[in-house]
Image (cartoon, rainbow, N blue to C red; front, side):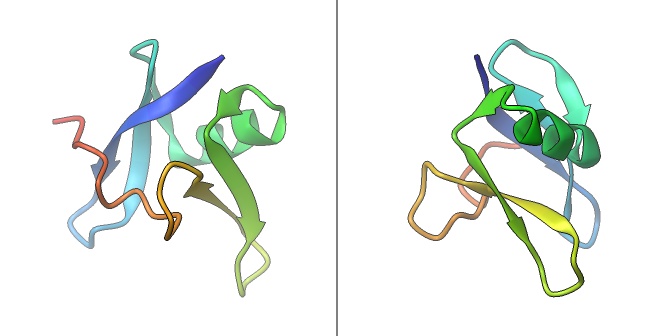
Length: 72
């Protein structure tokens, strides 16, 4: 099973895509879909205040991806 290893952020600092442990680069939406299907480990899905699904990391206490290296 794959896990998230790197992130790509836009100029606002928002995550727009992830790199998986196998080297695939997937969009944030694709990562949410794969996490909901049980294809990604080390992440959790949570509903935000607007009713959208968000990914959080199970590898860190605060659930953020702040300490993950950048793809580029």
